[in-house]
Figure 1 (tube, rainbow, N blue to C red):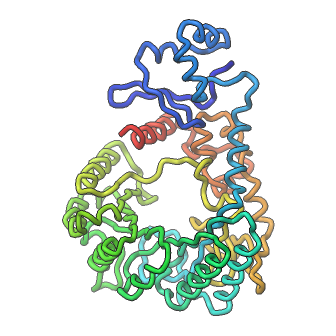
Figure 2: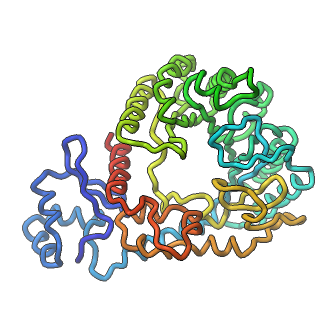
Figure 3: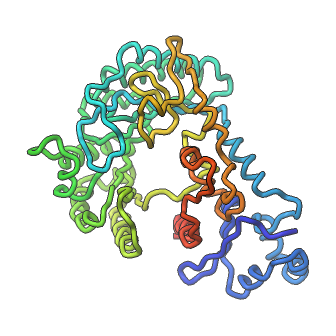
Length: 431
């Protein structure tokens, strides 16, 4: 026997915990037992533990803290990753109706293309692609479309409505579950649109706020005289009232956090019984350097939001093997408005970055960049000896591609940052 590669110990809320990032198991232990755990350095130490504390020994073995000597733990992660990323029971399609937007937020990484719009020919080819997916993938059980861009609702009637209707119809014919989701700034909803969407299984809408009305309207505005905050908050309320899930993404900077107190009053306009439909997540704008004081301010906001009856959390805790990025998966494609095909949506959609082209018959002609992406994982040497490999996995395939042929670490080789990931995971579980 040997101790696992993916073990951690952490102190939280006056309790000691040990954690294994592959089994995803936390065990609360007292200080004396923690000392026993830390003393397990050799095979003989583990054998001795089985004699004088068999209950603890069995718990460690059952939960992956100690493993058979010949077990290749990295290979177990690799096998699980491949199994998940090659899943044939689900297909996720991302569609960009446009790369234009009605806002011009200063931090947006997208290159907006004025006048861009998916034409009828590409709408038809996208429907043919969906037909090919549903009719040929015999193991398929679920099919999902995410609407992205640009602001996708700019062309709801011309692009979204026909593709969504086609997908829904053919999925019903073949017994495949269909659902959809929107990443939108939330400004362009109409009552008619909301009513039409009730016919579909809509997983949710991600809508962004940038602080209170004053702060938000300096970032997300229609023109110099017209902001967007009031309309967006009204639409969030309407969506919740109509039983749609809304994920409110709060993009924070060091300047707008103090303003969020004023947002509480607006959130309370959502009826108490409908607040389950709204969740709030705090995400730092990528240019912001977050320190301990900022983290505590965000945590305080989260506590207050929860008191109002909303779900709330600070961003996402990585789980990049069991819940890998959509772009890591075989059964995923992003169709740009012009028929270019991509995997990752978190980078630019320039022609030089495309990984394929949507053909007239609805098939995707993938290029070498696609093949490279799908084979890029587990090639970064520092990851293979890292204790949070099952959580981080070197980031996503895009991280790996951008750091090809060099040693890298998503967390800058900082063990404190890695420990913080484990702490946040514990908070999610234990509170």
